[in-house]
Length: 380
Image (cartoon, rainbow, N blue to C red; front, side):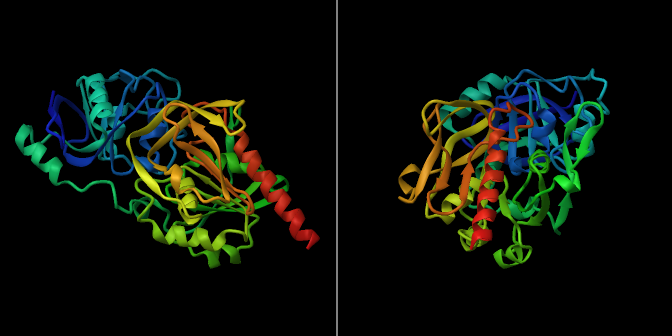
């Protein structure tokens, strides 16, 4: 067994066994509380620049298949588990977790006390770390972790966005036929989706609701988007700090009031900034499939999938913006909407993958918003 070490910037060091690729990487050390869905987590572009720790003790038991990935490759910096299964057992499995990480150059560590690591992050906060199979000296690794760049202030969106626009046609999963394509007759709404690190299941849900989806790079100008004459614009999830993504904020600001907008996760934060709000870094973030969120009406609670390390500051919300959803664990803002313009967003992931489906209705809300906007335009 090859040894590996994980060192945090505050001096805490964990030793374990290497799996996946060999090497040395840096990133923000975070944790995810989902019991399954490791494959979707690995391929979620929102994890760019992060070393992800899974709190569930056994990871990899159902292997890896190429149908359930959320993007074209894994994006996280490193992977930390208590125990990685050597013998995946599932009829859809095509390879082991270890083989998949090796194939994609992702460094992993297993055999450490993940509960102790998670408790440490909860107490001290998420922080930069070094994961290495090459250097096992504690002092050396801690020094490297302290010199490694923070995730704050980095533009990670440029690293994960698509290079060229593309048309998406794949619908949701069908047990008998696999992923369904959207019927041309059923595609009633033309949607342009900004790719800040978009997940495929978001696109599938849009198609399922009757959207003809074109995905565009994160730097696409508002003028280019409006020239495509969309019925609505979707603002996707993505990695890291929203504050440096100034180009996206400016484009969103230019689109406000001209076309309906729906944002998820990073898209929610960017929309909030464009509306005049500000964001701040959470102590250890929200990552997992069990986050309780209360709707603004006070009568409904959703269990949601989340993945973010930043949140919108409550005292920065302008008067014309309403808070629609609140996290019941820490009272952070989970959703906003503009009271005059057709724009709303949520901090969590209604498309799940992995996670509960309580919030799927939000895609229908986007459809209603576009439908009302079209009716108003036709009257005028």
